[in-house]
Length: 424
Ligand SMILES: C[S@@+](CC[C@H](N)C(=O)[O-])C[C@H]1O[C@@H](n2cnc3c(N)ncnc32)[C@H](O)[C@@H]1O
Image (tube, rainbow, N blue to C red; front, top):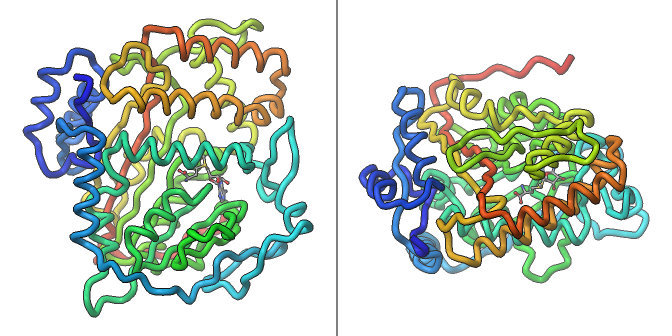
């Protein structure tokens, strides 16, 4: 099973592979998760899914590459978009009127220091860092997720961005783009598209590889994105729930921002850990010394901190019903992807995926210091929690999983939506 490779983006094309993978699977891992979901989807709300193939990471990468070359013209064109835009007093409207480089005073406006890390100043809700260390983590996490998913885009998303002759320029929006890892890949893979990434802080655009067809808007998504309505062929968000006050409302904005037949894609964690059998692992946040299993306890503190800051921790759990039940969406495909946050004896992936998972998790523990300590966790308790989580990560034989809830859907052209009511 070492080389067996589960491809969550391969679940439309081949129903039979799901059974095969489950039959010869020695441990639970991803294959059983896929089986569980097939049951959910047969209830009729969502389209059917299959899963699994025997591809190695390099197989997946090369087949992805082939697809890419089949689809795209190799000649990129320069974009007329500015590289990034920011204004401290008002939100931008697209297209941006501004195009300037980062000055020291602008940097002071955008960032603040807390507990040894650099955070954004724009939002009190989002309390993860926005510094080099976090950017590095997000870049590596993106490439790890692309390997685990077996590709960067589900098939309808690629189809929506493919530039046909005589078609209007394809447009893509990434909400909470972070380091820009995902949206930069989109810009390279679909060089004719125009892309906008929105985040609380800008991306460094001095990199000569910064795509010319990408523009970054600095904005707080909680204030709404009405200026984007009816604009994009693809609207994407991944792992931004920590900074979103009302995720359901954000999805309403996403649906209104995508053009008819365009695609929305949302991927979030619920920040809990699960056993191999998909059972929730209980946490104990009241014992001052914490308790085994430490990851569950650590994440319980994280959820408390996010909720206290105003973030919507219920988002992942509700994604399936919010998107699946939306009147203006069709071809809804939902999938749980179980990521071995404590790998233990899980052997689903090639070894380097586990190494990268451990590195990501170690960096994630450090990134959460401002959130936890800002919510009253003492430094001593934080260090105890981290110490035991690191031990569990490296020494436990029992895997623990986080559940990444992933959904994509297509905008129906025949359903008109009115404006959203104002926030009370
Ligand atoms: C964990 S990172 C994920 C980044 C990226 N989506 C990815 O998957 O690599 C979350 C990002 O969402 C951004 N974010 C969170 N809340 C936001 C908000 N209310 N408005 C804009 N960006 C937000 C953060 O600044 C951060 O860059």
